[in-house]
Length: 219
Image: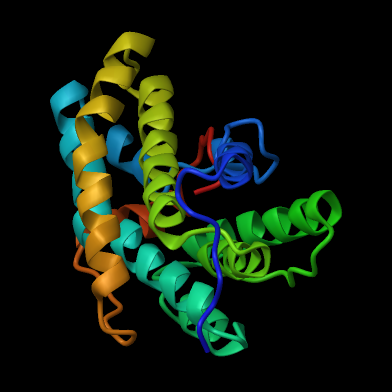
């Protein structure tokens, strides 16, 4: 099935995507650190360079890449349920499962109400891809901005945890934009079954986070 989509420069598409990936969109992303809190506590991520490298690895080898592929597959699928099952199975820890499911449910609830479409509660990237398909939004800016927002949220958590200045955080985010675009392009051309990642440090950090006595974030 060939799907008609709005061009990248269509004002409506730009407006919707800007709204979806704004920090103001109520998906609760600010409450999750994706295991970064445990990494900072362990002394693994201690400054601007380390936060940049940690986030870059998540984009290239971890959930950033896998979620981008899942989003693309959901965008192309008439039935998102099989993709949603894979997304849940890929969660390496209880907290990471909570993270994607809680954000996905919040996104589905808000988007269904605001845009007049039916988005079931699913893992976050699947919900985003399915919603964008229904609205005919173009895949290229969708997945690129999804990855940019993912990276920006990790950096924002790092700014609060390490801590770093806001300007340093924006420097990291700016430096990661080309990588986000590169991973987005790879995800769009990836084999539909090319899931999985090798960001083992982040996966272990998310597991260790579950037992931390003092926590600012939910993951």
